[in-house]
Length: 295
Image (tube, rainbow, N blue to C red; front, side):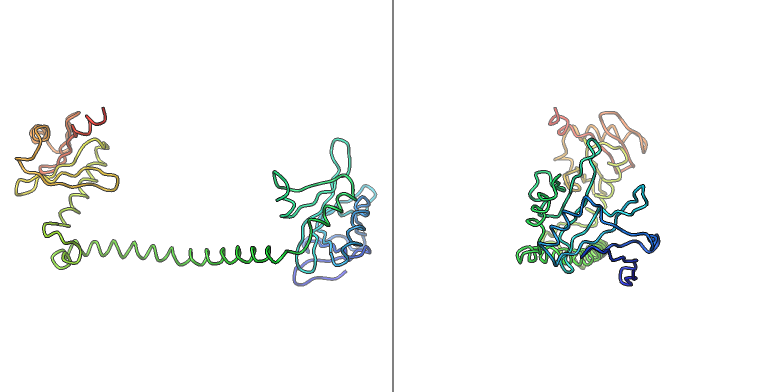
């Protein structure tokens, strides 16, 4: 018995060649109790050791028999430092027959539903294990290296991209606020339209969103009456709002009649199927055009 300081485990060497048993240091096995490979596994392990003398079988799972013996039934199979796969034995509950299970990625790829394979005959299990358990081929190592490299790059990219996206969002919001506040200084860099008034559009958008959310209806438009008597109409679109300006000559009869009724109301009042008044110059009007389209 000796202590493996790297894994912080008690390690016991079995008399059978190439068998290594490991126990957690918190609950070590009683040192004077012999650890034995389950007798049903001896023929299979003997065959594998003869064919592959460089293989090591590491056990971390065992049970105690009625006679007080400690049998181990599960193994991780290694060749050098590379794990090749897992091997374990079970007694089937129905007929108490012994089944030898083995599993690694190659075995999963060969099975329709993946998972472990098994055999009731140790010679058949040994043959299939010898075929499926071997060191990775150069192509498999290259594929694994590529996958691991991708994971490292993806993690590094995520760690960098999130702060960048957050910083960009903060910068954009601050630049937008600055542009609204100093529109006369920056408008030549933002648009080629001399008539574009970003502060007015931003105000109309905020008001439209507030009124629309307040009355919780997507079938209408928000109308803001400007000091010069024009009408700034905001309509919900797929992204944000579309804004258009109309005057008395271009305003529809439906819109003119609805606004005439709503002007008579007090702030916050609603006329069903007509609209609502938010304040003296801000109204929510049911859009007759959208209603007809919906029909």
